[in-house]
Length: 280
Image 1 (cartoon, rainbow, N blue to C red):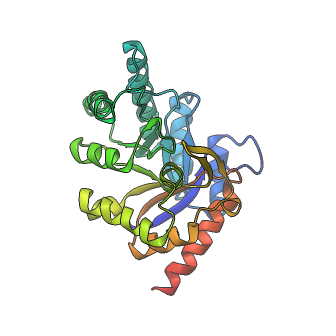
Image 2 (image 1 turned 180 degrees about the horizontal axis):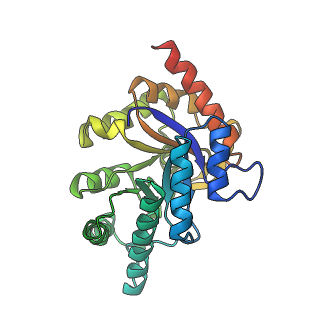
């Protein structure tokens, strides 16, 4: 995938209470290109609904991805919580595949007082088991652990690049707002370009052609992320990010997570399209 597609995290907000199927139709009406299906409270979609979703998305040329439930911690103390976390990832992948979605974004773990190295070993072990199960079932998806915004959460850029280089079927979900909130930096063209260069160096050019990106305005403190904001209410330099994405010819899905969802998604799309057309 070489085109950069723009869309929302879940169904657009206007009108409210749209189902996934109706949300995809609304995405197409808005002129957007993709939608991330939000399973954040649990995977509650029947096989029949998933097949309907796939047909509607294909008919309207809308790309889909999935966000797995929030209740995942591959570094949990209790074995039953790890097993449940793995189950949620596997079920998310099964349903995503039926929907025609390839990418599964998820929050991998908390450090739980462990060293980053110890947490990394746990995440690598248990995520590898998930990929083995999916491979056995011939469920063809890419698991995308997300760059996280709080310092208590597993998910630095280097951790995810390491996982992606060591486990087949894993690539990062790069949440630029989270990384800015976590570090207090990474909010300029040069810094955004540095992230993209690092991804290319570690994972190859193809990783840049098939990215899964989250963008939003964000509020943060000394422990990282506090909450998402609309882009124009935050200090996030989204125009500089879009310049970097254009200059690196990034492909894949860019998912907007701002509270106003489709408004900011369309804003990002419009700015990017103008930049892209100027450089053609």
